[in-house]
Structures are given as C-alpha cells and as structure tokens.
Length: 177
Image 1 (cartoon, rainbow, N blue to C red):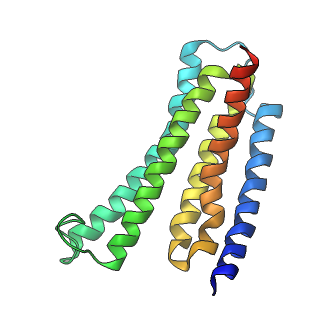
Image 2: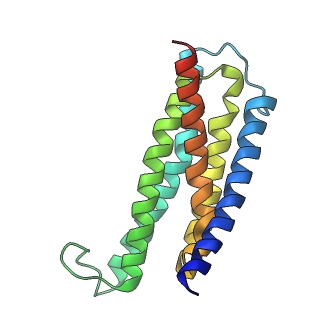
C-alpha cells in the first residue's frame, strides 16, 4: 500500500470516528441519557470526573501490563528499552503505551474541566467520552499491527471526544466572561 492509499484509509476511518464522536456526545449533551440534574454540587461533579477517569486509567494499566509481560518473558526485552534495542514486538507495545498515555492525559484533563465547568445536565458527556475512549483504545490495540489505515478509527474515538469537549468548555468559559 503506497503513502496516498494509506492517507486515504486513515482519513476514511478518522471520518467514521468523528461521526461516531459527534453523534454520541451530542446525544449525551442534548438528551441527558443518565438523567443528571442541572444543579449539581461539587462532590457530584467530582464523582463524574472520577468515574470518567477510570477508563483511561484502566487502558493505560493494560498497556503497561502488556509491555511489562513482554519484557518479563523474553530475554531480548527483559532489560528494558533504555538498555537494549528491544524486539519489534516490544517497540510496538512501547508505541501503543506512549500513545495511550498521551491520549489518557489529554482526556483526563478535559473530563475534569467538563465536570467542573459545564451544566449538570451535560454530565453524561464525560461518561460517554470515557466509553468511547475504551472502545477506541481496544480498536487501536487490535489493529495496530495492520498499519495506520486500520487504527484510524480507534485513534479518532480517543482523540476527537477530547477535542470536541475542550472546544465546548473553552467556548462556554469565553461566553461567561
């Protein structure tokens, strides 16, 4: 597959991820599927943030565990990436771990910002975003070896909810100034 074909494949799958993100988060914001009250206090908002953070934390733990298991059971990887060149498998798992860490940190900051700033009736959004994060990471893990076009949807389902939520939080904050 040449570069242009890979780009088209990535683009197509990222569009799928963007559409799913828009539909799910709009559903959460407009229809309040979990029935949250509009006038939430700080402890209730903290609960939403904490529960939402469990998804990125769980997927990060899985990523760390996969690489640790690889290193423990393979002589060429047991000394870690800083001391050896490592196997191709370990390099791939390290790349997945790095991407999961990046995505998880970004999502975590934004889930907390949403829980702190947005109306209580929209608290379904970070919870749904956390579900998309889990689905996206699972797709990303499962398709990583197939190449960039195949992991586009998984990447998009972790990245786009964070971006959309960040934009909405920033607009909300600016509108309140």
